[in-house]
Length: 337
Image (tube, rainbow, N blue to C red; front, side, top):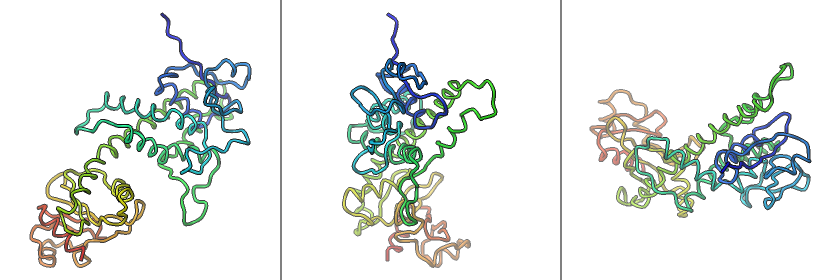
């Protein structure tokens, strides 16, 4: 029996990252529209023949799979917690995003040699990643497509830009002075480029963020084993921990609690690192002691600190190290005072 592929419609002419990403997500990571046939046209008669329309048609109706955002009355955002109007990328992600992320994770598990055991993704964790990918990636595409200023005022950022994908995809369009350029070929080249970025973004969240969350969570729960104040945590391995701390503190109602994180150096010894005031700040909640900072002479540093296997303390006081866990912990405890 011959396989029948779904028909996906979007507009022809100059393309932008929102409909390119929308088509990439549909054709590669949704069960219903996988390997769908993309038709780029502005002919309403052909639109009517499509199983799904994105970024064209003047209708937003999930029941009939019409996903345009250009109509004047359209004001939908991703959720009540977000205030940026959706583009076609955001619309497709809003309705298919959980399935898309799960299928990309399945692809990562099948193709990447992972060195640690990662917990099976449950519904709650999948929802966390769904929100994180929107906030860190899709939202900026929605915002740029809708002409939203990233900084509506000097003190507040409205959305994060972690990739300048919109500008990159615009450069896939044929230039005004090129002859005999097939616009559809360019569109599909852009789609493959966007797909690689999408995989990279999910891989960063799944392997870089989600895989480490359980370690940081356990370290937070056992924090009193390091110090009675509960302000120092110990990680069993070096991993990205910063965003987890802010999220766990928010979840537990303990914002600002953790001051130092201890973790083993990849070579030898232990690092002690200060926690910043917020995720984007270079200011620390507590820094390592002022009198230790930036001293290059090891004997002088040992004498001043009274720690015999201290290795270094950065000039800013945000990080230091010792050869033993016990003395890395001592550095953190002394710096709490």
